[in-house]
Image 1: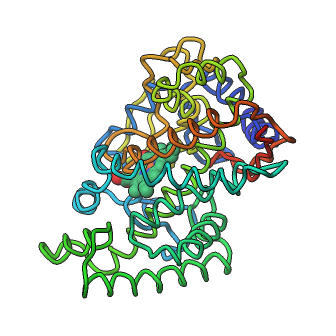
Image 2: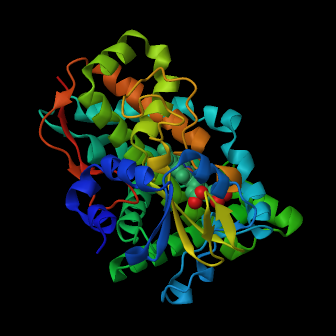
Image 3: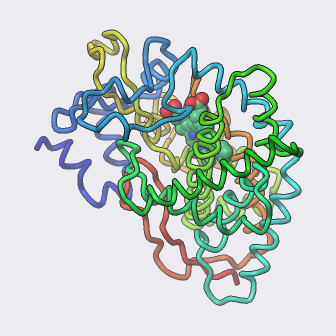
Amino acid sequence: MSDLASLLARPETADDPYPAYDLLRETDRVLWVEEMGRWLVTGHREALFLLCHDRVSVNRHLLDDGVPPEQKPRGLPFIDPPDHTRLRALVQQAFTPGAVERIRPEAEKLADELLNAADDRDEVDIITDFAGPLPAITLASMLGIPPEDHDLFRSWAAAIVEAIDPVSHQLVSDAGLQERVSMQDYLTDIIAQRRQRPTEDLISGMVEAEESGDRLTGTELMEMCVVLTIAGVEATTNMIGNGVNALLDHDDQLARLRSEPQMIRTAVGELLRYDAPIQVAGRIPLEDIELDGHRIGEGQSVGVLLGGANRDPEVFPDPGRLDLARSPNNHLAFGRGIHFCLGAPLARVEGSVAISMLVNRFPGLHRAGPGKRRANVHVRGFMSLPVALR
Ligand code: HEM
């Protein structure tokens, strides 16, 4: 194994991948790693080029990787135009900054309730007690899942996300597949109910769009709900967990955020840049592409390392420093181009509500033990992050 490939496989790289990204970038900003059969891109400029290139696909069916076609991932993030354009237009409206701003009071109420429930405990796990439930329940409520089923929805979301292989995106356990089937059956019922009696929720909105233009089939609609859950819940949980972790490592920045609460907007962007929840965006060129003196072949696998691009010193002065006021901050934590994160406005609202409320309500917030990272270099987050609130 080459030095670089073995470096990427080391457990300490899963814990802190940034030194490895720096080494990759210094070696070559666009690098073929034979052992992985994959190009790795760590330069910001090169990452932008690929993410915005109209001859670069997200369709995993183009990869000759031995994964059976029925197990390849489906849904919006893995579809190219023209289908992508049609599907995205149908849900886009619900996720505009104006639309999600209306969710803020509800997210604040929920965050308050979760913190009330944790308030008198000696030790709290930021992930299971706060960062996990907040996005799952917020999304359930947007979709129109009745409150009595929110816990059920939350446990499905967690079980499905847990069972997804980060590289192939396929569900790797029978238990995960079973949970997905249960969730799909449940959603099919809810969709049928909304067809009969529409309400003000996102599922009713999508049903209406489907019926008016016959543009979203029943299966596409149900899959869209599953994709929103898979794409949205874990990344937001990890944003809150990674963000709180970074603040606990940087007392000066935490103090600054408490004394200047309006800084939360730039703070959320910087926390996302500093430790991005989604570290890799997979791409497959539809034709040979020249980049930095390399020829990336048609059909080859490319890993655009968002976390690496976010630490590129060509774009971010002193990239390893957390600076909550950093401006400009052209980070790629939400990707770029036509697949730019649909849920970014929602994630920003949830992130700012969660982090502001936690740090301002509990001035004595501190670690109660070491956090436990997920052993996964693609989706970066914590399994547990124990803190004491006082
Ligand atoms: C901080 C939290 C989040 C982060 C860091 C994040 C990150 C990303 C990234 C990097 C992509 C692009 C992937 C690519 O280009 O291959 C993406 C796409 C996507 N995200 Fe997010 N996401 C977050 C929250 C959400 C939320 C809350 C939702 C919805 C409820 C959501 C739904 C989606 C969808 C549907 C796509 C695919 C968009 C498309 O292909 O057009 N995400 N996200």
